[in-house]
Length: 272
Image (cartoon, helix red, strand yellow):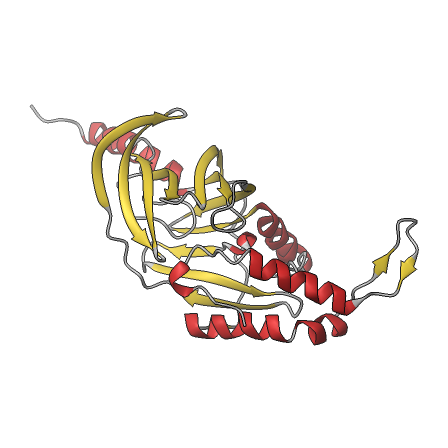
């Protein structure tokens, strides 16, 4: 007996529907991280993984809003006063396997990218558990000088995850390094409703060594950079006061040294 062609069409549509939906979705992750290695407290940042037509962007809620505003008005919200964990901004192109890590230089508003060429060699473990609404399975991987435990679900047929993690047989619901310095967990899924991803433009590609030089230059020349920028200080009554640039610089440098625990420990800069 021959099966009508339209039956095959219905079958393939039924199989492809979850995949097509996942390809155009927004996955919201909560990152709980230690501001410095060994810290007893954690801080939280909300990140968005927007997936559309074979490409995706992982960025903080703040950067996502800024990119949307920049696409409409030409300028965004600007960057923070230092390199930090809000700068976990990754653009992935599934077809070309290209992964770009964005680097936002504070104060001068320059944007560069680093090509991530490190392959992820996943080890899938038999262990399973339910996280939220999803049945998940464990996997392990090494990246950035850290060992990571991941939990993925085949119920969402998208080989994606937070930050630059991808390549498992389903969406990564949770991933954390062994020291629990970084812990990403999926908290919500929405339909992606924007016309496009609104990925930010960059000036050029740089190497990890060039990135270290950018960080060191910012740290070393912070005082002159702050003096040239438009920064105002105010007292408790709201009156404008003279800015103590040296005190501001010393405080920022101290914060940079104390919170120097990047995802990629193998590319960590020891400030001098």
